[in-house]
Image (tube, rainbow over all chains, first blue to last red; front, top):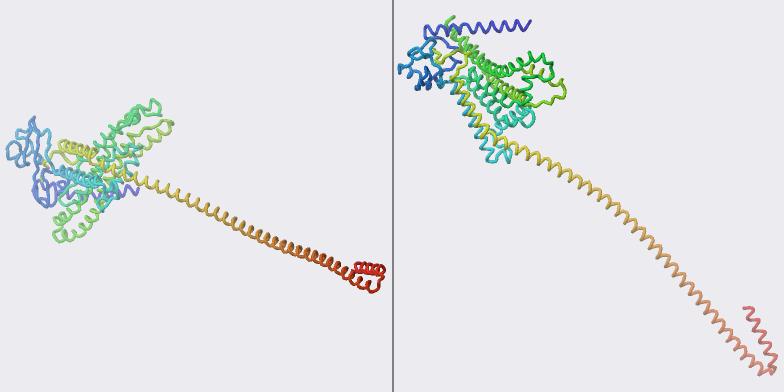
Length: 354
Length: 170
């Protein structure tokens, strides 16, 4: 009961915060001069923003059976081949919509940046290890120690913990890479002007799809047996169980993608909305109240930033951990001595899915 | 503000997804193939070395303990032996002393005995000589008497009886 009330209150507060912001962004399309654009802060853009300056990124378009390459969106429009359609998206001048848009976007830049930073960290650490530090001696220096703490944590607490036998070694590179990359993408979202690429469903879905691929490509015979012919249950039950199990294959990565996406997006939206209240208050009650209430909103934002920094790490950890759990479940080879164990396993699977 | 890219917040952007997928896959391949394995092997190697050296140290410790235990045992044994030797030495010395004393006593007794025997012999021979001389003296004195008194036979007899008495009284 208390939960219901709390949830209702939370929704109400959220709506109160949200609707003026939304109104503000709606008003934007008419006046082209809005106090704050909430959605614009979290969506993908065709420019890379830094310190207020915008660098427009190349457009690679495939429309109506032809490829088009432009230095940026404005060049595409200037060339006369493309015009702005509804909602700002560009379409070909003859009305043909774009079939495939391979443009470089702001979120893609952050994905690449994260990959590059991950690469640099790993490369530098690897070079140290190759030179013998950490191989023949103890790791020297704070950075290498920090790296090792991270790496050993992923290897022992995430990979070894959930992937049975010696198989875990094969998946450490994958888990380590996605953990570091997702952490970096999340943390980039904390920088001013920057955006968290993980607040984009496309990114999280792609990452979850890669986890799905890794999981299914390494699935053991038992894994597939569990999916199609669940052991230890009467034959008629398979009519229900097999579709559920097949569905389960896809709900796991789906949950992974949505969890990361929603967590990162909500944090960003919250911060933009709360800061946006300064402008909303200014519009509604005048500059004095708007600015003086800003003290409160800024303090709240600071608190949220700490929370976001925590969430950035926790969500990367959760994504990696669950990837490890799914991989571990898929590669495990069961010994069906008792029917009970498989049923217990199934219960575990169900619990983990919730 | 314009959303240049198609789709809203919850839609999947195929072109963008393609880029992310391809670059991440290539990156993962590189990580899996070249970047992470050296780190894994280095850590593994170091851990194995640490485990090995710990095992070796433990073994060495056990060995050292055993050696020290053996040493202690040997020390104890040596002490026991030493004590035994000392005891034996004391006993031997005691025995030797007793033997010496015994021997000395016996020697002394023997000497004493010899001396006594000799004295006895000397005494006997002295007595014998004395007797002979006394006899001779007696004879001489007798002869003197006889010469003076002529009754030699009677005198002789007297002398002999005197001497016999002498020896009996002696």
